[in-house]
Length: 339
Image (cartoon, rainbow, N blue to C red; front, side):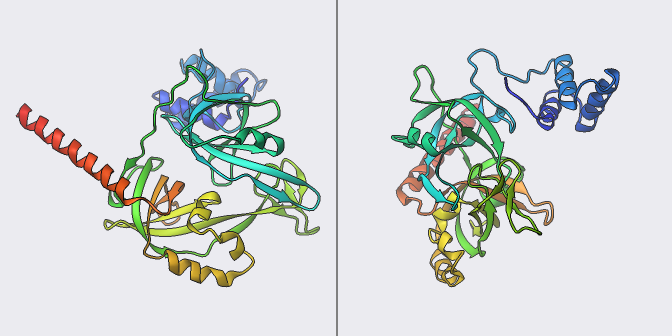
């Protein structure tokens, strides 16, 4: 059974009804009061959704679209086309050894990271970009960057190129920085790197990849789910790109940061490596697919990188531009004929 967090139910009710967030919360509270506090806010939200005719689950095939997957869900089944496969990494915390593997899938509604641990990483053998996979029995977590992830356990299944399932390509619209307006939209940008900021490093749990905190008294690192752990280090890198119409800060987490700065792991222990690496990257053209977000402090739009191409191929970009020009010319001819 899928479990949808109350916050996600509220978002869906706002998106599919005439009520705003405050009104939906009032309805949930009223329902809880009506039932004398015998149900939780989540239960009340489900009742309100039923009363308003909002379907929270897809029926039929059991497959969820990626946009409908929410943190907290369990036993999730979905399908997508592989857009990235990352190297399997081994870790040794001193008290525990293991492996973790990741790949990204996409459908026509969104993208999501799939994470496999230890023996489950064997299922990644033979996975390639462009293949279709069906994921069964996964649970959903929200990572430190706010993105959702599918995690597989020993009861989960991964089916490569499942029969009867076709995943349409999700096309990220190429935009200019000056035209970015919508918070949350997924876009593709091309620009030159004009600044690069020192990477930040933080401790994560080796079992679930969640952020861990150090106890001020004992000095131990504690994970909310796995208690005391020996942490691994993750990293985040911010770059500023310019496409001629404006500049935007791009936030690159972990694997995406490594695509721009392959030696980022070494920089954590040897800061002197950063400046030479920065010098080689400044002025370089990169292509970024990412999600637009608004920085609530600076009130500026930024980009959370989903996929980075540190060395875009000129011939592919020329082909894309020629296609766009042809489409514009065709549209212009159609408009003239209508006139």
